[in-house]
Length: 197
Image (cartoon, rainbow, N blue to C red; front, side, top):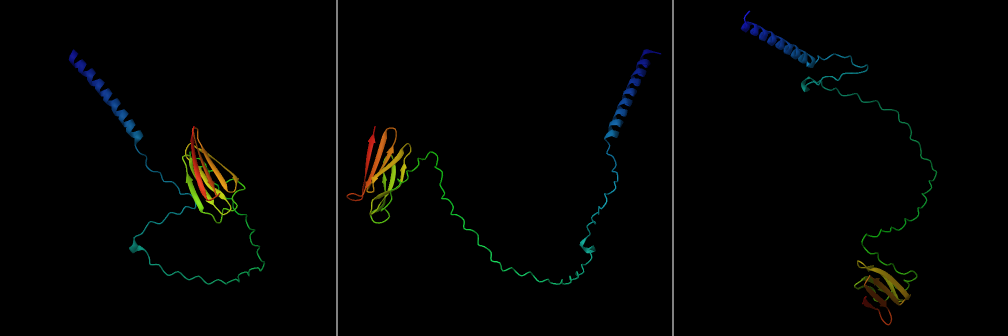
């Protein structure tokens, strides 16, 4: 046998073997990924299949449903005549106090023990401004009363009232002090004194 036919025969054998191996592999892969046919399963007990929807023309006309027979009425129980006790009065709710706003100085409250004789007479309510804050007072027939004292940013406030006729609100900072004095003697008036250090 000459060399050329021998090479040709070897080449054909190798090609046929490789084609066969590829075909077997493809057949195996395709066969393993083929979807399986659905299998019928029995329905569980008590399962009722819904009827298929029918067209409007095929629906039978509804017959009027029979009216239910009236039932025998039983007499309703009569209410008892026992008097119900009214609910116990609840105590009045506690007054609400709002929390102080951050970065806002708190206002001074009127000194305890003061406030008599401010409700009537006099020149009424006045607000006095200063560099350190504002003070609102009420001038009455019996003296002067503090309503509020609100310091400006960076100031603190303190109040003093030695007599019902004179009230002092002092706004203090690191390098400044504002002093507001309200008095009813000899007449209703207020003075502001500014002091820098």
